[in-house]
Length: 230
Length: 230
Image: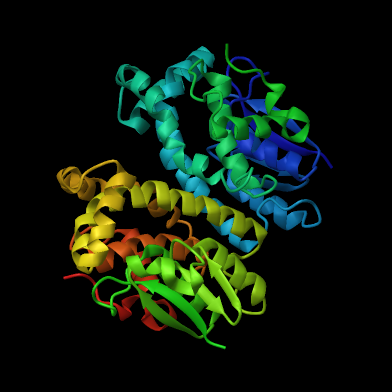
């Protein structure tokens, strides 16, 4: 049965951009599970699956509804154990939590400053009316204050990637010889920036750029199915 | 048969302090393998096991000599598969490389500035004559320049631990419900500081401090067998 992924979009339903939804799309493709996307906007999120979650991603798999990207990945591995693993064992599932915490606290912390205004501009007026005050409250900064920091955050972003860059000397993916959910966690962050922002945050010749390109190639180029922001 | 761990010390042979040797001591205890330590100083390292390695840790297990903390952990899991795993599967072994890269590029980068002078003072005069110029060359800074940065590095160290702190909301160890080699990687960095430095880098009430105390309790309190620096 086809799994339904409730996926976040702005005014253009053909450009899903949520980092956490991208993690799940890549995870579903990794498992080889057919899935379809239901595009929702920020203000529609509370209405999906009878209010199952305040945030996306949410999936419906038959009668099961699961929210939260990490919990969805764990659900998929548990429910479909005969398909390629997303964690590569219990240790990998635990350590993926560390990769998630690093991505969230280091990469997203920088990217939030870089992509914020451009995301707002992708949204419908109704979503913008929700997004702007909610993000100002969450960040504790006005959009103007974020804009003032943007150039410095772009300049400093490469340094945030140092651990990934160093690790890539050992192996081609965070998951080892081939990708695991931990790769999709970090991919989600950079794909979010690729789709929403004109900022150039990855440079040619950087091993991280090469890794990101490998991720874009995965699963018949799923990540490339949405073109980069102009 | 008892495994021999060549372990780095300063002038006091009872205070091994190398972060990488601590990773291996914890890994050997985790596997339940009896081991003995051969204390070596910096200038003795090139002489051990007929010059097998320029760095410690090095272990001898019967006729096998293995160098490099990560390769030693992998060797132990491969050679003693019936004992508790250090990686929890292939995914965990791959992701431990990411934890290693994070620890090295984020934690060690800060700790180097904090513990450098105190380590030099722990060494014999002969070792100091090697250590001071070699570390100035590696860091691209004089000891005086490092000393000027020390207070700021101590003040900023807690922020470097943010990903670990965030992850500890999900589980008690980086390895999940119980520790794996990934925990010993990070433990090694903080144990290095605990043994060599008077700097207070962990605060009471921080989940990271609680995790570090749990690590010190492991394996019959192996980590506490060397008292903290005064």
